[in-house]
Length: 606
Image 1 (tube, rainbow, N blue to C red):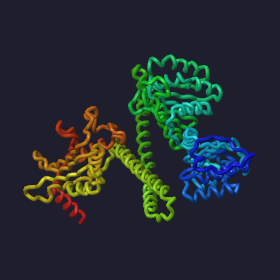
Image 2: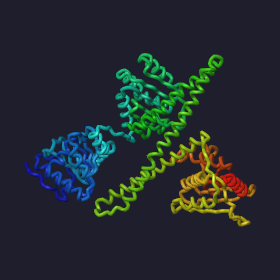
Image 3: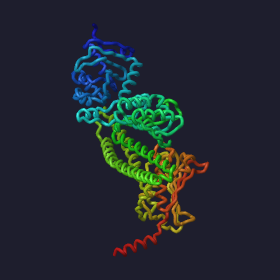
Image 4: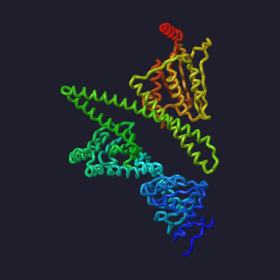
């Protein structure tokens, strides 16, 4: 048999696919493949590969040499207890991820591809497939990336093996077919309980057509599951619901279906299994007739806090259906059910109190991890920027680390803002928003806010204040909660910047000509303006047309302004001008009365 020789440049350029036999030929081919790599290497292998790569000296030296040459390597391997030590060595040479039970053994670079059907622990290969055909490389690149995107970091799997702790898994699924397969897998694997929430009747109909309801019944028969379903009522679904209820009688009360209202905020089907797993499938287009066409992104999670949050929402809705049914029955027979109605109302009040307490506690719990995330992320980002780069091969990795830290910091700040908004809404709803009033110059405060803003070069900020004819230095003095007024101005400015891609934002403070006891603050932008559809409801909760934000900022701002005795309003600019203008008022401080009250207070203390 002829021995394998290294391909020349012309050989590599000419496309070919061949099978090589014999350990000498295959070893030479693998070593030549590794030496030909210029930038990157992607490898996918079963659990025996780490022992081959790290247990055979020539392969190990070649991989180390590639690391020293700056080659970026990615490995997807089935990490087991038996190959753990080898895998830790592989982690020093590139990025390693784990995928359960993977069987493919192939590696590819920019221009070449090699594969082996089987591997034996720490043993040279007797047969490999080689190809430099472009179509083969493109196909295998797609296969590798599919494995890579569904694999988990090696550190998590190693921790699971060494400590016996199963890591939490949170996966965003873009492929509807995979979401469907996972949907059925969760239903079939559930041992105790399934909780299902449908956002629309059509969602239920689509999933019934694809066999989900039948799969539930089969799981009930096999594992004696308890199944509860929440969904909006519709005549088209009544026959199916009656069928489930008949099945419920047959299966000893293991299926229960209750109706909820269709709401604009609920846009996802939520599947919960055994209070351990969740699958949230976003509704992309409710007009579609098939599951694959109707859903968008899906999120699978085994994270206990996340799953239990969905369980808590489900249980609250479930309890509310009970309470509302009790109220309905009481209203139908008032002469006999006054006591039941009072009990139901008491339970509703208690439930509302529990929900508010839950939001309050949840917001505080969210705040706790935000501070270390921000502090440590900023510290790490600062260190990464200052690190002395001596080896060119580390530059790209460092840049990627910096980019990732910027993403962490940005999202942590967004989480922090959301937490503060939730706390503010809770205080407003419970009428417990406290103001810490002090005397301060509003013009100085507004100027400081503007100076602290980071604005793109294509946006111009203008700040104007009215000139007092009496040169009264106290014209802009107010007695108010400085932090809360700063929050209002910052929120209005942030909104103006968000919707102004290019143009001018003008901030103005004037004395009300009709009422010298009020200051009028206006923020005028040249952005996209306010959508006419939401203009009448602009200051209500959760009203927004932006793809970012919760629609809480203007609601909170309105309550802060009104708690100071002011007003807030907005409108789009005239037809010949782009954008919109927001105004709010705040009373001017009565310095004489303020000094008198504080003076008498001081005398009382003496």
